[in-house]
Amino acid sequence: MLAPASLLYGVNLAGEQGASLIMAGMVTIIGILFITLFIRRQIQLTIPLLDFNLFRNRRFTSASIIGVLMFIVMVGSELLLPLYVQNVRGLTPRESGLMLLPGALLMGLTSVFAGRLYDRYGIQLILRGGYILIAGITLLLPLMISIQSSIPLFAIAYTFLMVGIGCIMTPVTAYTMASVPVQMITHASPMTISIRSLASSLGGVFLIAIMTLSRNNTSLVGMENILLGFHMAFWSLTVIAAAGLILSFNLKGQNS
Image (cartoon, rainbow, N blue to C red; front, side):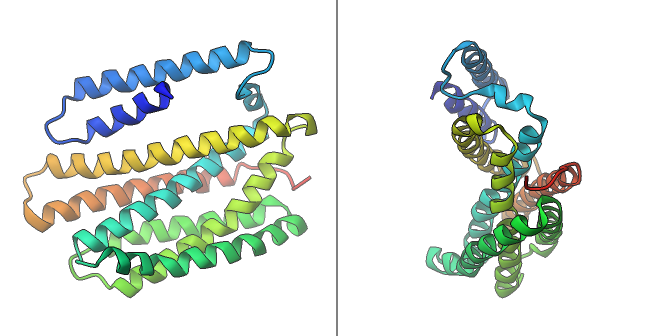
């Protein structure tokens, strides 16, 4: 617990106003060091808590990275959009939650449909289509942000974003499990859950840090300062989605 906690705290500290970047860097390095020591220890154990030898499998590693980037985009959008509509547009938490509801419902339905497409056609078509949709929406979001942006338009954009994530979630998870030998599946499942959870937490903290740093290092004031922070955070989300799209074209093989 100390390793991820140190890493999360270090990244979070970097975004706090008046915080020492040196201290934030030291805490982050300590977190990375503890994670490195943990990985080395797990590799040496006969029965490890998490078997990092899984990453010797290129297909597992590629699919895991793609899945991690997808989760960062999902958590990041779920975090940033409510903050924007509440802090800039004045919506209540209930209203911002209702804005996200259609996307959440459609993501669940899309995941079921995407699973069937994966069984029939394999990973490549559904994965690339989903990431193209995600990258397109994350590119659109920072361009939409303003003081007078349409809330229904954001709801529609978020819905399409969740459809893209739904297209990826089930297929990439199934592909990740199918990429390892049967005897390794018991290790692959906890590893996948662990790295996605850690990456999602780090992604959310990273995006908030980017937003805060942007606001703290500008001469803009008032609402323009707030909008700048949101723009930088959403553009960072766009870069993450673009990285997932590029990697999706390198993922080879069918579902078998």
